[in-house]
Every structure is written in structure tokens, then in C-alpha cells.
Length: 338
Image (cartoon, rainbow, N blue to C red):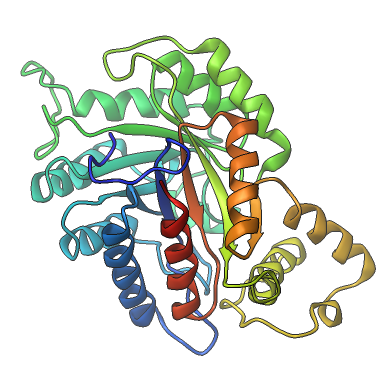
């Protein structure tokens, strides 16, 4: 599950979550080039895995065809694990996902992760366009997970089998932002990744549920948790705070229900929000899972976050407008790894 070449921070590996953001004035093609370049750099810097997330109907996110991009990134790298953070399983027939990831694993054996979520990754109208029905509200997610896992079994008597996929050992993770997936991951004995970078209020409760209810399985003998972190590192605190205004504008747009391409940083963030919106975004920006600063600030806050959560791994999302700034943010992280 862990890339043997991965470096550690306080004994735990660090990974990358990429939404393949489309910058204002740019396009998806450039976004994919940036993703490949970042993946190649973080592989060299000793990060453990590189995950891409499924979203739809968002002009600022290019990772809708998630398995396609995973294959593209895996093909341009050599050792880093590549996977989904995650595939929104209710949007898909489990057999199709088994075949897609069976194919990826056949191409890049031992390097593919399959992270699964139950949210639509979109609005209701888009969910209907993807599924052609909304009979599933996510409550049948456990049955979908079990169906998917069955396609990876080596049972020769199964009436429907995935080729490629059958008999392949592809690590499955459950992702979540509440206690539902935490409990399911615990019951199934699977690794769990919590979206603390956008649901910090439920973080400690979900962790407690996972650890208290964990049942060892053939896949995992002890609980394993990877925590999501929004992190912006720069050479100084002041520069990091300036660069973070892109992320803050995104938080604001989400609250307002506005979908746009990713915005460049601005000098006066107070000019774009009301006092109420400022307070709401500040609560999100000041969560323990949002880390902004220069190298020493980042090191200290990461240490505090690891101590608080007892995470086994951290997966870092750095929402930076300029590609060179995003590279530098991850480079700073690599410099503070053991």
C-alpha cells in the first residue's frame, strides 16, 4: 500500500490530491500538462501516491473522466502510486469500474489505488444526467461496494466477471466526509480516507467511529487512516497568505453556489465578500486541516495536525493558481520530510 521509495514526515508518508483545476483563462489541456509535471516532481521528491478526484459540471475542474487521467499520469511516471480520490461509485455501474481499474492495474501493476466515494460529485441534475435515474440516494453504497469487490474475486463460477479485473489485487479505499463511510470502512476492514480538508467539523467523530468499529480483514489487519489537508506553502507566511486568496475565493464561490474557473490571487480579499461571508470563509480557512504559511509555520501546523488525528498518512491538496507556486509548495513539503 505504501510506495517503498516514499519519504516520511514524522514517520508517516505524504501524498497528493489533484483536482486538475482549470485556471481562469486556461483550458483542460494545460491542466493535464500541469498534473503530469507535478506528478513527476512529487515522485522524485518522495511522495507516496498521487490521487485524482471525480467531479462533474464544474468549469474549473478537469478530472471528470477520472480513470482516463489516472492512466495518463501513471504512464508518465514510474514508481509513485496513482489512483482515485475518489471514484463516485453511485454514478457508475460497478462492473465498469472493475474493468477500468482492472485495465489500469494490468498496465501499471502494483501502482493503482481505487478510492471510492458515495457523493455524486455534482448537483442533482448532473447526477441524473450521469445515472439516468436518481433511485439511489447513496444508501445502497454498501451493496455497490460489495458488488464491485466481487468482480475482483477469482471465483470461476461467477456468472459475471470483470476482464481485466478478476483475480487482481487492487487496493480499495473508502472515502468520506461523515461517519457513514467511516463505519463501513471499519466493518469491511478497509483503509479509510477522510475529507478533513472540506469537512473539518466531522473529522474527530469519523476517526473515532472508524477506530472503534474496525474489524481486521484479509486486506488490512489494523486501522489505516489518510487525512485530507488543504495546504499552501511558500517561502514566507506573507506570500502564502497572498497565494491562499485563490483558495478563499473558491470557498466563497462554493458558498454562493457559483461555478467558475480557478481564480488568480488578489491583493484585497476583503473587497470580494460581505462581513458574513468573510466570517464563514474564515471558519473554513482556519480549520486545523487548512495549513497556510512559510516552511516553519507549515512544519509546526502539520505536526499539530498529525498529533491531533494520529493519521497514518496525509494527502495534500494545494490550490494554487500559478503552476510554479504549486510546485514550490510541494517542494517545501518535501524539504521538511524526514
